[in-house]
Each structure stands twice: as C-alpha cells, then as structure tokens.
Image (cartoon, rainbow over all chains, first blue to last red; front, top):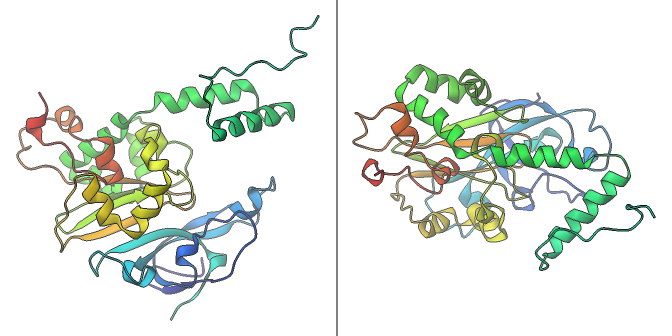
Length: 93
Length: 208
C-alpha cells in the first residue's frame, strides 16, 4: 500500500476506454485517504474474462463535496467517500 | 422429435423491459458457453431472496445494547456478523459506519447497484434508479429531504459511494426513549432505509 490514512491524493484525470470503477465526477479532484483497505483483483481486466492480476491496492478516499461539485448546495463540511484503486491515485500534496 | 431443439417462450408477463430481455439473452449465452448453469442462477436467486434487512437490524440492535460488540462491528463488520451466526456475504470487507448527533452517513452506488445484499436483502428499486444514483452524490441533502429526513444544517453529511469491493452498512442512531426495550424490540425499529442512511429508525411508539 503506497498511501496511508490522512495522506492527500489526487485522482488521475485520464479517460479509460473500457470498464473501470473510477467515476468521472472525482477525476482530477484531490481528496484525503480515509482507509487503506487491501489489494483486490483489478476490475478493469476481470470485466473482460481475465484474472484481474496483479491485484491493486484499494483505498477509501474522502473529498469535500464543495471540491467535487462547485455549486454543491449543502453544508461546507459535507463529504463524499469512494473506494478507489491505487493506479488511479497520484500524490496530492 | 426432441423436446429441446426449439427455443422456449420466456416466462414473462409479456411486457418485458429491454434490460430484462438483454439479461435473459446473456444468461442463455453464458449457459450455452458452459460458464454457468441454470441451477447456479436459481441457487443465486434463492440465496438473494432469502436475505432480509432483519439480519442487518440484528447487528445494529446488538451494537446498541453492547458497547464492546459495537466496537467490534465498527472494526470489522464481517467478523461481527459471523459472531452472531449471520452470513456476511461474499464481499471480503464489510464496513459499518456509525451515525451520531453530529455525523450522518448515507450509501449509494453511483456506478451500478452495489449493496450489502447478504445483510439487507435485495436493494430497493429506487436504490438502483438513475435519479438516486446521481443525486445522492451531488445533492444528498435534497434526496434526504425527499425521503422525509431533515438534517440539521450543522450535521456533517457523509455520502459513501460503493465503487468497488467494499460493502457499507449504516449504523443509525438509537432513538430516544428506548432504554427499556430489549434487543428484539430494538431490532424491530431498525428499518432497511435507516441502514442505507435515507431514514432514521422508527420511533418506539410506531410499533404497535
């Protein structure tokens, strides 16, 4: 696991022509690692009948809603959390 | 003449939506390729419809009455479910998150319909709908308002988008005036929607 809880990470802004589990709404956004879970098989290859190896570390990453949605109508402290694979994360410091 | 050299009419109500026809065609293809059997599909459906929110409610009710169990639930919900003899399902990690006076959690799967089926049963239709999946992320307070849940402005709202292998279960706040209730009576207050985070548990007076 490259990242640890409390670390700032940026989600890669790249597009991916195929199945992937990184929603467009957080691409390019910076958040904070909440939990470092474990490594899981990669859905991007598993979706096409392959074995999903090598496994990819998975993290729970939290974002301020106002960083994700510029016009977010709720409270400034509201947050949104996603499970994101390490190969979609970059150092966000 | 063989009974199986012709396609059978599907068992439907005749007004099958396109997605159902597509799912049936995929199922047929997977069976023809030997990837799955009809028995696998039937067993999977049997398992799914045998699950219910009563299991999740048992977990939460125990946590309300047993602080040490609550800590174990929050540390590892899968292990906590096994401790109560419940089936936590195939997900390797199940996470329970605790609502408090100051923090409220709600769960969505913006990409599809990931849901802790083993502990809550099949997800409601609205959970899989595009409006819930998009608005729970971008306007969660508006969604909660439509569910009749009013959050104080100073409560921190945390949305969990289950985008991968982890399944999330909300542990709602224990309602007031429930000190005298036993674990089973408490479990009856803990609704499916309160464990998704779009409602509070029932008030004790609501139970007849």
